[in-house]
Image (tube, rainbow, N blue to C red; front, side):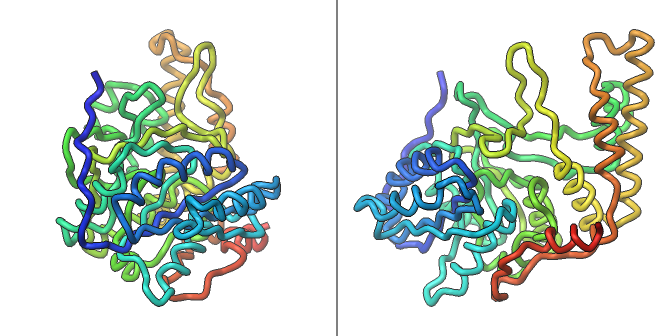
Length: 361
C-alpha cells in the first residue's frame, strides 16, 4: 500500500512563496496543474503563481489568459506570455527575475512542471524544509510514476567514469570504477548533488547570490548546472520525499526514459547532446568535456564488442545513439562561455543560445 505523508497544518507565518509553471503547448495540463495548486493556496495565504507561456503559438496563451481570470485564480495566478520558445531555463528566468525585482519579492520560488499532480502539502513540505535548513539553496520533491511508484528525482552529478559507464552498460566496468548510481531514492530527506527541475523550490537569497539558469542551454541539464553553482558557492541541495508529485515526463518534448510495451526509449533530440556537452564545459572545463565525449564513445565500443561476441545478450542495437553522439555532442566555440543572468538584470527577450547558435553557424 502506498505510503501517504501526513497533511501539513496551515502555516501561520504567511511566507511569501511563488510557483512558476512553464507551459509549452500543454494548456490542458497546465490548467489541471492549477487545480491541484488550489489546495496549497489554502495552506499558504501569500502563495502566488506565474504561468509562463513559452511561445507556444498554438492558442495556449489565449486559452490560459481566459483561465487565469477565473474567480478561483484571478487574485493569485498571473500569465506571462512570451513570443519565442526559448527553452526551460530562459522561460523560468523570465518569471524569476520579474518576481525578485517586484516591490515585495517572494522568499522562495518553486518551479513546477505543467504535467504534474501535486499531493496536498507538496509545496508546504518543501517550504518547511528550507525554513529549517538555512544553508539549503534548493530542495526537490519525490516524483511518482503514473502507478504511484517512485521515479528518479534526486541524482549524483555526471562524471567521466559515469559517461564511460553510460556508453558501456557493463556491470563489471561499473564495479571496477565504482561508478555511483545515477538516481538516488532516499527514504527520508537528505543532501544530494542535484534534483530534477520538475518540482524544486529555490531559496531566493541563493539565486540572488549565484544567478539564474544558464541561457546558453535550450533544454535539459540546466538545473544540474545551476545546482553545481549553488554547491560551489557553499549552498546545499536536498531531496524531501514527504513532498510527493505525480509526473508525466516528456509531455511537451516527448523525451523521457520510460519504455512502453514493445517499444524502446525515445530517441533523444540534438539539443540533449549539446546541452550535456555544455554542462561539462561549464562545470568541469573544456578538457573534461572533451574527455567525457570520448569516454562515452569508448564505452559504446566496449558494449558493441560485447554484443558482437554474444556477451551482451538481450541488448538492442542503439546505433543511432553513436551517430547522434558523434554528430551533436562535440563542443562548440561558445560552450564554455557562461550565460547565467543575475537576478536584477533586465530579462533578455531572446535567449543567449539562439544568439550563440547563429554565431557558431
